[in-house]
Amino acid sequence: MEERKDDNISAMGTVAIGEAGKTGDWRSLRPVIDRKKCIPTVKNKPACFLCWLYCPEGVVKAGIEVEIDLEYCKGCGICAEECPPRAISMIREDKSHE
Amino acid sequence: MSNVQIITGNQAAALAAKLCSVEVVAAYPITPQSQLSEILSSYVESGELKAEYVRVEGEHSALTVCISASTVGARVFTATSANGLLYMHEQLHWAAGSRLPIVMCCVNRGVGAPWTIFNDQQDSLAQRDTGWIQLYCRNNQEIIDTVIQAYRIAESVYCPVMVCYDGFVLSHTMMPVDIPDAAGVRAFLPPYQPHTILSPDDPRNLNPVLFPGQRRDSEGVLRDGYMDMRYKLQAALEKASETIRAVNAAFAEAFGRDHGGMLWEYRTDDADLILAGMGSIASEATVAADRLREEGIKAGVVGIRSYRPFPKADVRNAFRNAKGIAIFEKSISYGYEGGLCSDLKAAFYGTAIKAPIHNYIAGLGGRDVKARELAAAAKNSLAGFEKGMVEPQTTWLNTTTG
Image (tube, rainbow over all chains, first blue to last red; front, side):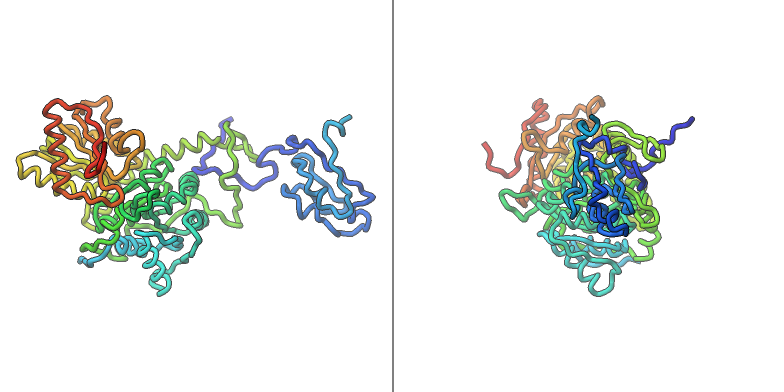
């Protein structure tokens, strides 16, 4: 198969999920959502979504329920910091595997 | 039909930008460039030039605005001098790495400290390795013509071009200039076609982090690593020599003025002694060569027009019969010698050109350089060469040293 070469004269890429690689493996802390506290789940309506708003990587899906794409979440913890009812905990990856 | 006006170098540069119908101008005033940004501002204010004039808080922002505007498809112009150019330094690399055909005038001025507002070429020489094409002008006619050529060069090879001319010596000196007609410039310079247009319809990640190696993107294309992309810039600069020669030839055909492609020569055909330089000092050297010829010394001049890309093949041809060479420079690579001298020596390596070379540093911070002083210096070099002087020390002209 002929290799498709990079014919751009300056560096650029299309805007696509995974363009920068699977960044989830950079993570040392994993966000874990407590559904008993998460506002959209508790109220069963689209509400709050501050985690979605603040996530610098755009890996939070604003739905009922809120979901975080762990393939790309780098574990920065901003969602946990911003969550009003403190529904998100950051758990060490090595411990969570135990 | 000619339209000759008596104007300054800054007026010539402003007229050229107007004739090229630039769409965005972002500049921050600095002596001796100020008049240029003021004139462009007045053109925009009066509606003579349909462009966006962005008033910025400094030169770093001026070039950043140009980078952004060029990225979305506008033809852009900026200009600066000395410390303003140094303040742009980071964005100079960014513009070249993004392969944006920005044209900038550098009105050459000495760099502080200590402060000076007067002319030398240390400012642009210090930006040699930023990936910009650098063209040097010897008079105001060359300024207007070179800016017009610069857009065609830049937009052909997708590299930014710095048009350099000496502060005050040219920027504030009035000379007769034949102004090219607008229709002629439009015919000579086709509309700007960006290599990529950033648009909401076709979003891109521009200049993302590149890794040391190549990497497959999300669509399966093997994307260049940092080093591959840098090689593309180098290859473009090397190829630009052909373009600079071709654009000069096309300009000569269209407007009847040939300023030399990569360099120009004056009375070099039978010259034993060749004086060399860039910009107005090389122009001054032509008067010195005439004086030397009156004294029976066969002298000629080579003026370097394109400093980057460096005219390696052209200088090998121009200096092939030289028996002695005197290089006059308005800048210095501290701790060594003039940059042009080093580059010429390197270009001669491995060729039959074995002529002795004497490097002169002259005119820093506006110190006057008279034609008779250049003639006397060159004559002095020749006397030394005849006595067997092969590698003379760099001489600081008209300077208290030792």
